[in-house]
Image 1 (tube, helix red, strand yellow):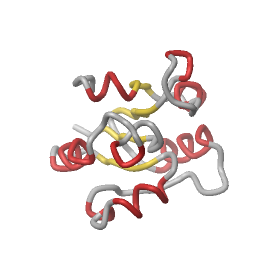
Image 2 (cartoon, helix red, strand yellow; image 1 turned 90 degrees about the vertical axis):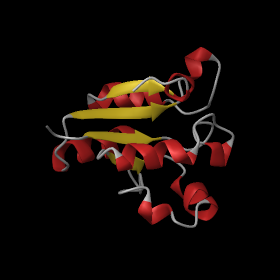
Image 3 (cartoon, helix red, strand yellow; image 1 turned 120 degrees about the horizontal axis):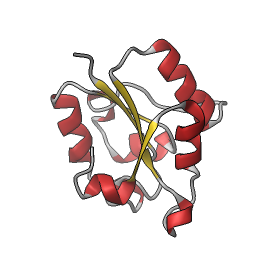
Image 4 (cartoon, helix red, strand yellow; image 1 turned 45 degrees about the horizontal axis):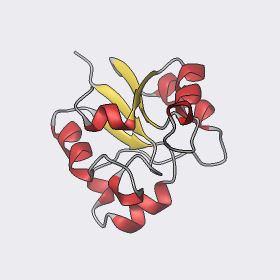
Length: 120
């Protein structure tokens, strides 16, 4: 069975940038055998988390839109499911159009508050 690939937005998603998801949750996913990475303000994460390279397998996007970055991951990284965790401004929280990027790239989307409440 292939692992899930999780791409996390950072701003207003992870605790390092006023979000509800603790860094420990990313560690737990990694320990469960999933592929975990960042699709957002990765610079804030690497500055705040000294052992960041032990938690995430990729950081981005770099000179690509989020949707294009997710599409490239899906093309080149084999996984059982592709899950973007981030903001949906339509819900009144966050500024990133992460739901739209996930949908455009053919990924499942989980809103940050839902993930923090246990959605996987």
